[in-house]
Length: 344
Image (cartoon, rainbow, N blue to C red):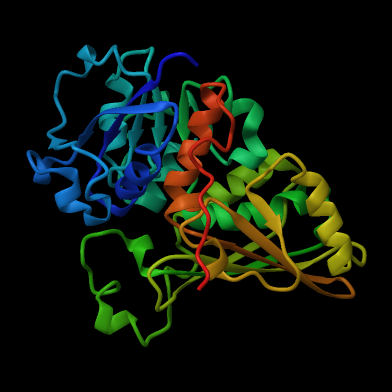
């Protein structure tokens, strides 16, 4: 492309917004026009996100009520709390593409949304415009889409571990997902469950049977294949800042060895640069600050365990959002996302 994409970020003060800035400031095809954060309006971005010191002169602004004047934008990212994007995104000019990192547009059923997010959906008609943004399973719908509902972090880790099995109709009965996340998944504002003394030497489950990512996982699995299985989904708090690790316990219709599963996944993800297959168990340290999902396997006769590891803020949020933007604008899918992890 001869000119750079003109980008806006609504909600740039949280962890998702911070990661969008970190990635997009160095993206070769992007120019950030503005970034909003009402409570920090007038402050320099680098005063709020000190890791960006010296990398940008942007200042946060308040979100304007007059969204009709944003015709010069090419794409708007929404990194706002649940419930806010549905009030703003539908009012953007029709030429502006939208990528929402919240849960506002992931679920097609208004009643299911209300049950899991605790509020009525105010723009359910607009939801029909949103393609589900799990890049590796929905590329062909994402490419022509104007609007993208970026997946939840737990949903990303779970779906990437289950999609090849569901697409090939290999699952025999219930699936149990034992998923664990770092504290950044709870957002930048302090809360009892993210306070360091509470979390640093602790481990606990939360939202048993009620996590809001469950309906989107099942909704997407029904699109991928013949999903009729029972899903038991449990989330746990890890005493780390970032990363998601999921152990996915399955029983297959026929014996599938770890090597056989690896071959199946390699074929399914043959065009997916950001899915890496590893021997044995992955490690969240290998994917931290990257857009990779590492997947490993263990098997015993018809018992198969799929292990997935992602960075919840990158592949589970901002990185996948940029990956989707690249597809929507005909860019290389990896543009701006060649982010290497660290060792140690």
